[in-house]
Image (cartoon, rainbow, N blue to C red; front, side, top):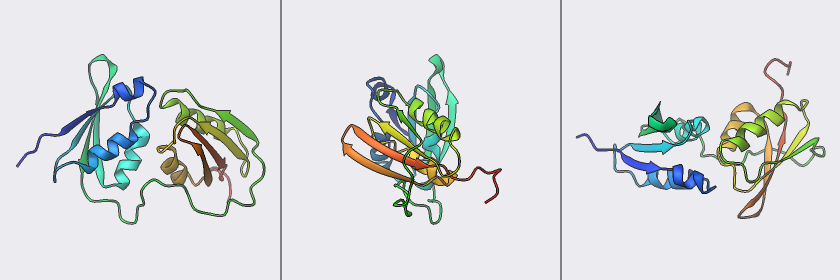
Length: 175
C-alpha cells in the first residue's frame, strides 16, 4: 500500500523569523507507519539531514519552482547507537575564557549555523567561541558532535541562548 506523504511547508515559519525544527519533529512523530514527510523549504536544509538520519529517516531533495526546495523524509531504521540531538557531554569546567564572541540573533537560518562554523575555523585548537542566538540552535548540536567540538549551552530565556564551543583539533592537526 502506497501512502501519500504528509506535507509541511516551513517557508512561512522561517519568513516570520521562527525555527521550524519543533514542527518538523512533531510532523514526523505524527506520520502513519510507512508514511513520508514532504518538506517545503526556501533553502536546502543540509544540517537537518544528520538530525533526521539519527532518527531513522532517509531523505531526497530537489530544487523546485521559485528556488524553493522539496525534501522527502522517509522513515526507516534508526542509526544504531545514535542519540537524538542534545548538548554534548564532557568536562567543560576547565575551559579558558572565550577568545571570540559572535552575536547571531535576528539572522535567518541557515546564517547562524554557517557563521558559527566560520568563526570557529578562525580559532586555534583549544580556544573558545561564545555565540549568542535568539532561538535554540538545534541543528548546530549534531554538527558539533560530529566534528568533535565540545560545547555547553546556557538558556537564559526562550529567546536568548548562549553557547560556548571549544575548538577541537583540525583533521590535519596531529592529535
